[in-house]
Image 1 (cartoon, rainbow, N blue to C red):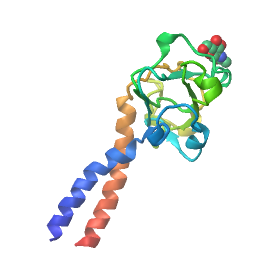
Image 2: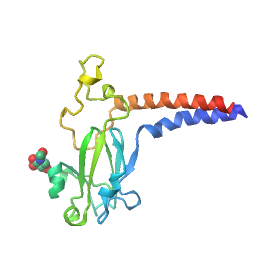
Image 3: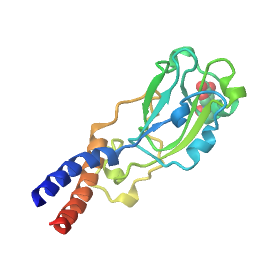
Length: 190
Ligand SMILES: *[C@@H]1O[C@H](CO)[C@@H](O)[C@H](O)[C@H]1NC(C)=O
C-alpha cells in the first residue's frame, strides 16, 4: 500500500517538473491564430516567462506569423515574406525578456481584422545568473550588479532553440522544490 503510493509519488516527482518548468501557450486557445479574435484579451491574464513557448495554430496558407517590433505592430507593417513562419503550427520559444509582438502578414488581417498579438515576457523562474546571456567572464554573480534590461545582442527573430543551460537551470530548481514537496507528502501518506 505505502510502497504503491511512494511509487506513484516518485513518478509524479519525475514528471511534474517537466510540466512546471516551461509553459506552452496555444495562441487563441481553441480558436488558434485567426482573424476577428481579441488577442489582447487573450494575453491579458497570462504570465509569460523566458523558456515558455507560443504555438500559433492555423491552416497553412490562410495566415502566417511575423515577429515584429512595436512600430511595425502598431502600423501593421509587414516584413519581407521570407521572414514569415508559415507551417500552421509555428512554435516560438520565448528566449529573452521584454515586450514581443507578432502579426499576421496575410492581406489586411493585421490592420483590419485584429490578427496581432503583443505580450510581455518576464525573466525565467530562476535567477538571471543562470541565464544564457550572462557574460562568460563574469564572477559568480552579485545579482544586484547585473542590469537585466541591458539589451544583449539583438535577439534573433527566428524561433531559437531554448538554451540548454537555461532550461537545465529551471528544471533543477523546479525539480528540487518539487522533490521536497513530494518527500513531505510521502511522509504524510506513510
Ligand atoms: C522596426 O522594424 C522595421 C522593419 O521591420 C524597421 O524599419 C524599423 O526601423 C524598426 N523600428 C525600430 C524602432 O526598431
